[in-house]
Image 1: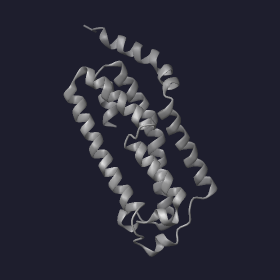
Image 2: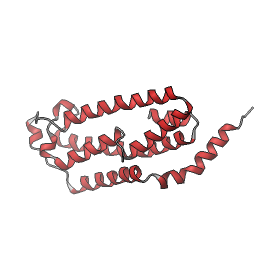
Image 3: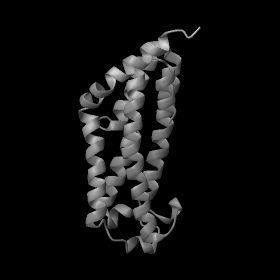
Image 4: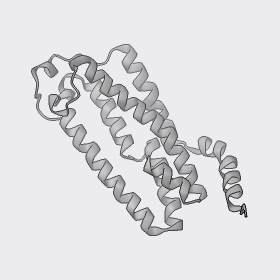
Length: 182
């Protein structure tokens, strides 16, 4: 949520709009990732990354969703995470290039950690005999993840309606903040 804070406190229109998009995106992506963790926990009752490995071999549909949401979390273009992060960095760069560079560096570190987690949980050899017995998503789980993926893709591919809705509020807030209270 550091991007949201940065987006609000550089007092720039694009950065603030990016922060709001990032909050909406965070609702979709984090909710989906928690649902994915819940699916795995419900089946194996373990929170340790080392318990998993090779999940793609027995749960290919689930693996698609967890990789998709992990990439959205890392800011893959075409997803809602990218739109929010890009707008925040773009707005921040117009105020201070160093802040934007530091923000971009945190994106790289976050993406590296996310890819490390995906590699250990989803790919590689099956580490646990219990993983070999897992069942893929049921209809309810598939439906929920599909709806969340739809939200992530819609905002990522076509953010204009969301940006238009918030434009007046953001401009009014920035105008209000520009007036001195002294």
